[in-house]
Image (cartoon, rainbow, N blue to C red; front, side, top):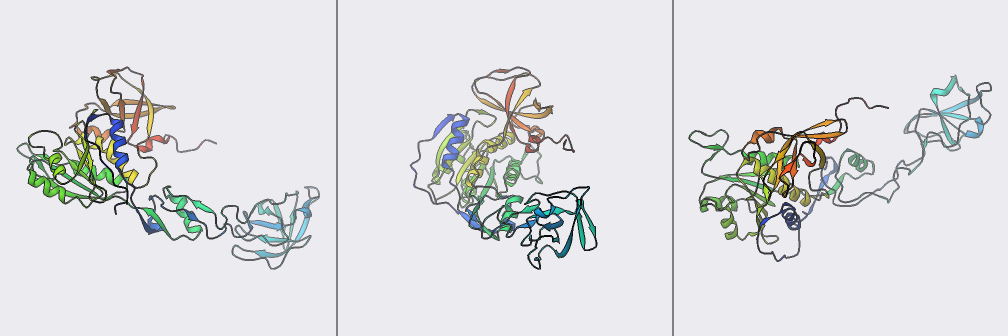
Length: 433
């Protein structure tokens, strides 16, 4: 599954770097995955890995855009409400049918939407303005040539490239694939992700949480963040705080494309993830990012083709989720062929003042409200990195610049949007015309 790339000489590990430098390091190390062939019905949401050339012309023939009457426009040149012109209806052309013969001057044919325009006709008059009387039709106005006719090839011409690599396949693209007869397509593979947590204090959700034990929620929230991208993950379980247990669990994930370890990445006596990764041959590219929450994040990779990208995320649940958004999510989208790897960012005004110490970029969990054309951001309350309830209600991450200490009420700030539906105006069910 690994893409073939050139052998890279990795630089020495950097420490305490900026968020932007860390993000760029991750993207530079993230290989685009190879392709796989799927039926077009199974390819929704995937990134196209090949150009699609039309094997047929659409529409294949000039056809009617309306139910009505096909005729020669010059026959109605003198028509008016006071001087209607009647023409004999010599035959009918249903959708999928053909005209019995070419029309000649002074004749009309009944025609239905999608039916090929018969030879000799150059226009279609919609049935709503025609007075039908048996096998004759009366017309009370002239009509221009070409009206209500969809020309052959006006949508797609055979041999034309209709879809370019790198686009996401949605309903419109899948419909086009069907129209041009492409039932199988080549798309970028999805990454294989392995997840593990570590810590003697951790238990599974149905485990015994008495005596200070903590439910291991990180693997479940991180797995959900993966699924939001259409990526399934393999849960490796909980490693205990020994080098042997950590190594056993990490080895189980070396066949993945991305390996995510939660907790054990700092520098304490029981933090074994970093030294074990290095023992296994992983080259660590950075440790520590000047951000809050999430400072002790680490990132590394094995030699190309020898192992996965590796993210060591903090153990605190909010820190792990925020680090996923800033680093893992962009890596996954890059590997899947997306051009836009990051969350959408909007401008919003603060409903209240905020303060922090200078030195780290803060990602503040906020709720968002649209007032007319302006978004307003309000803190979710506690910003503790262990307060998972704040992530459950957060609609965005406010970017509090590292050098700033105070943001006054009404200040315009940038917010990464977690709830993408907010970008559309859902307050109205009716489109004003």
